[in-house]
Amino acid sequence: MRCPFCKAKETKVIDKRLTENGTVNRRRRVCLKCKKRFTTYERVEGANIIVIKKDGRREPFNMEKIKIGIMKACEKRPITEEQIDKLVEEIVRRIMRYKTNEIKSKLIGELVIKKLKALDKVAYLRFASVYKSFDDIKSFEKELKELKR
Image 1 (cartoon, one colour):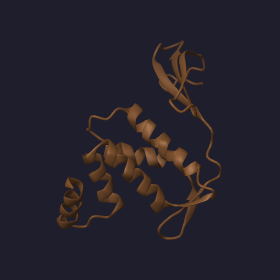
Image 2: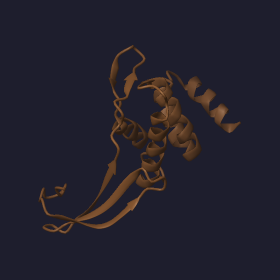
Image 3: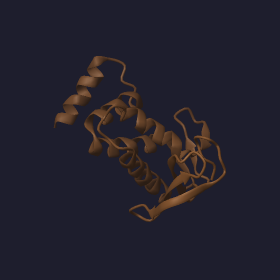
């Protein structure tokens, strides 16, 4: 494993553990050259899942896209990267349980919304504003009323 900081080839695993559900190996590493620490994750690659977009396009499933969207929604919120990783892992595990190799992007969005709503209401609202394409303040007000219930 190359060091992401200095690109040296010599790194050492200083801690390793399985995540809570045992589907991902987390390894804490240290670079033997620059001495900086970093974390790597090992997980089973997606089983060739195809995402069907709103406009009908198809593209390979990419877990990183889910993580990036969640990270944007959680920006400047009191949410750790570990919480985000756990949330992404739960969503991916749910997607993998479906009996088909094709999944609609809408379903993925709904899974993300459900998890974010339970984690952080502000992050949920941020994600929902993009996912549900809020185009005016009334859309926000309607969603806020729903949240308050």
